[in-house]
Image 1 (cartoon, rainbow, N blue to C red):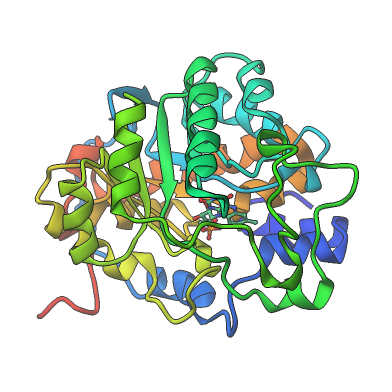
Image 2: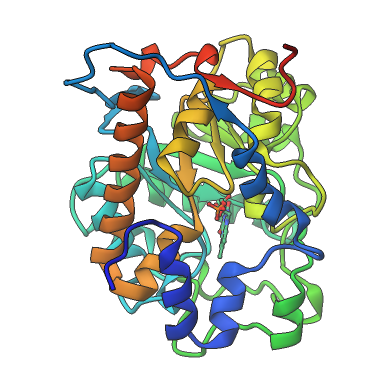
Length: 358
Ligand code: FNR
């Protein structure tokens, strides 16, 4: 049967993948309330479309940190994509390039920074996390990763700031999730990070602070995006700390359960930044209408996570291409049906939220 929306890939991935792998990709933390709320909150925002506007020509292009892309829909960092498909992150990179958009490579990728770069030209960001190593060794490892990303032509660093530890995903505990033995996390091969997924020890550095954000700026000229901001308070600090952009994210509901949906806190974050840096959103985006709603609330663009690995599992590179194309088509249609011809015409008045006063 023909696939007609992004969500349909999830059931196919579930059928195709080993249970341990599917559960790792799909699950959220603890009660998975935030995972569900990420979808539910979008459904509570409604449109106020404008009519009888000539929408024959629609322009979805935008410029992100100086890089021109074909649409405000980008690819989030997802760890260990070769569990989904043998071509893993390289297939995702090719699909994102073909769609004219940005791909973010996870530091826990199963294809190396260099292998992804070798897939051809494309605008790519590199996601960084700090590891539980002695502070000097930790910084040396991070610096080496940053240098490799620079040499490979990556354009920005995405610092994951919402994961001093991994969230408690109970299916991973039940399944004793572990990376299949034929795969490695290519960028950090050979690093002694302890048992990783066993004993609930993720090997992550719990001491990471805003000071490290400042240190990162001393070692690279690449712009740094802070991923995982959920409050106006932290948005203000991020701007002061020199962030080039903010990603409002709850990690797809995989970290702290019972945080609000990102779409519910986006406006607070946008207001706090006072237009000084672009604000992006991820977590739960599955429809072109979701993209429009995020932009109407002040986002400069969105990132998608799970739809990428589910479509990769189902159809490899072609699947990821199709996901990006379907979202593009839906977003274009939403713009047309709302009376918007360019991203700058999308305004707060095009939507109504439950927190708007009548
Ligand atoms: C993630 N995410 C993530 N984030 C990050 O900064 N580094 C990483 O390595 C990963 N890995 C990862 C693996 C899997 C399986 C998932 C589902 C998510 C979070 C990701 O970048 C993004 O924030 C969410 O996936 C967005 O939510 P949706 O689109 O999956 O709902």
